[in-house]
Image (cartoon, rainbow, N blue to C red):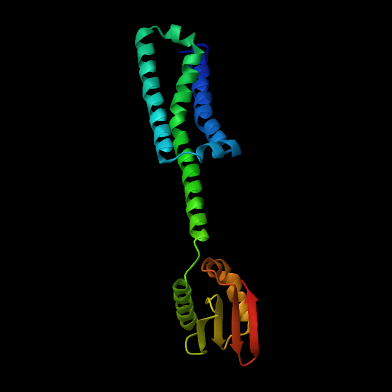
Length: 204
């Protein structure tokens, strides 16, 4: 087979590649766009299942169509005269690659919703007590026997995290900076401390 005979095959292969890129990367770009995300995130779990079903149906139908077309057109030269056949085949084969992108966008939105709902629920005093005990345990493990630090709740609602012992204001500020998200998650309003060098407080 000389180069002249290879040209149609190369051209049709490029059509398949172009169709595959359009069906996968092109569709994924749309899914990840603002409009695509807004559309996908409105789906319930059954909407995602329907999308999977539609894609698999299109792929199976497309493969069946390709096989029927090949059987009906045993003459290769007649197939070379239908470039859209190869382009469409590439698009169909590229569609399954959109499934991870769609699933990822949908799952990220559901996880963000779950975190938001959890954040809306106010933390109980018991949750704050447990947080204070866990923090005291971690501080004791960190400083060992070199210093004594006690962590407890103060305030009528227990929304003040109080650190008493050998901890300076600077250390308290660094601690709050490192654990601000965790402290805020259990609805502490501020962190106070008391040591031999005086009292201090840091807003969460």
